[in-house]
Image 1: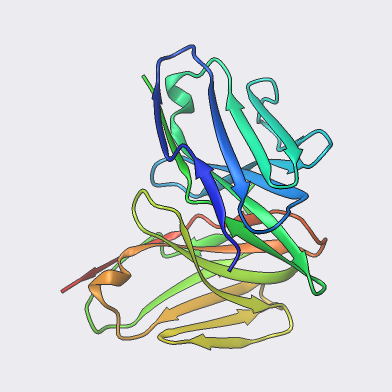
Image 2 (image 1 turned 180 degrees about the vertical axis):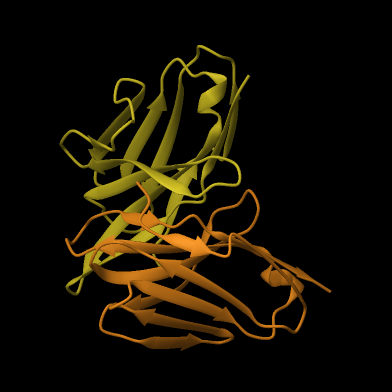
Length: 117
Length: 112
C-alpha cells in the first residue's frame, strides 16, 4: 500500500522557538494533504487542508500565522509551528490523498509528537 | 470539527468477550471507516464501509452501517489483550478529496 512518512517522529523544543514537521508521500503524488492535531486522550482534529501550489485552507479556530503550511511539491507538505508554546504540545498527524480509479484514499503518516517546554 | 460521536467512551472487557462500539455522524457521507490507535502511536486502518453497504466483515471485525440513522457499529469478536487500544470512526463528506472527520473515539481495555 501507499506510504506516508513524517519527520521528525518526536521533537522537544523550548518555548518561543519554531518547529517544522515534514509530511511525505513516498510512493505516490498527492495534490492534497491534511494536517490533524491530537491532544492526549482526545480525537484527531482537522487543522488544515494543504493543496499543492496554493494556499492552505484552515479550519475555524486554527491560526494560519501560527501554523504555517507549505505544499511546494506533490510529495511534500510541511507544517511549521511558529513561536511554539507549551499549549502547542500535541501529536500532529498528516494524511495524503491518493487518487485513482475514480476513488480517493487517504493514507496517514505515523505522527509527530511535539513537546514544548 | 468533529462529525462522529462514539459510545461508549470507554469499554473494559475480559479476553474472549465481544466488544461493540457505536458511532453516529451528522452529514451525508461517501464512506465510513474505522481506525485503531495504540497509545501514543499512529492510526491503523481497520475497515471501510461504503454508504451503499450495510454490513462488512474482516476477520474478527464486523461493521454495520445504517445511513437512515446515520450510525455505525464496530464489533470485535473473541477479543484479545492485543485489541486494547482506542477506536475511532471517521467519515468523509460526499465531496471528493475532503478530509476525514473523526469521532471522539472509544477506549477499549481487554484484560486477560
